Image (cartoon, rainbow, N blue to C red):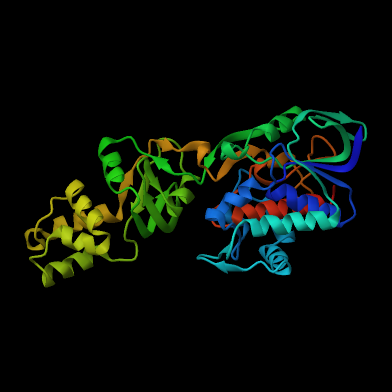
Length: 394
């Protein structure tokens, strides 16, 4: 039976950070993953450029039933700490917008630095290794794996959530938590596109598929985000939609202000004075694309010269554009979701050490916990911070 001081299951962002940090303080670390490659989600993230953290990361950027839980770990390993690691390895990066930091080259630069740190610290990495059973021992845990029997003093679960099953996501971490007495909060897809079934809405979105509108304000349940939206064949996507999806529940209405930075009533009145013979669709084509302007005029308004509208009608047009209300049929689900909302109840886990309060020597880090970040590098920062926190105590 192979023995190691620390066994970490899951060689994603959180698992790699935990492994390199624990090994750096002299712990003997064995890192396991059932996939044939480490960090698959890192490689595909950020369109292949990995949005690895955010300059403005703070606890308010995270969703959890226990909102104070993330504060300790985030304070002890900050975005600046990870940026220092990136700089140490000479990885070129840039701020795209809103504090989002991306690699200049490829996501593999981030995975490469994590693997290099693991290698330097002496982490043993075993890929294509599945864990079948885990049992508690008086002084640790015993694991039955496809590579034989293992034992360890500290066991870290870094297996992520249910998002993007094609990359190997599974409910394994939740099963382990349940086995050792932990409560699970309901899980659902977060940071995910909406689908629409209303025939008129679906027709509009389908005709506009691929069209993006910049800086829309999307609101739901008291939350709002100003970012781009994207029309798709199935419904709506884009950063603002992904952000608000984490606050949406089936049956909820979402509000979209297509032009939040423009005083539409005043602008329309001014256009009517200065260009009374211009058609509404012509004006909308100047605010959006020609195709979108025409389709909105066709689907929502009857396009005619501006001089033919009353002030009340112009205000109604402004209101529709500033307060488009729709009820999504659903989301695209875990297939395309960037995160899993819910998970292991953090009230049963130490916020300082990430150790289970139910089973000593068992740790949970990353997305498997009920902590989910906004879009923009926050989920990676949670992976780095929670992995580092556990590594100080395993």
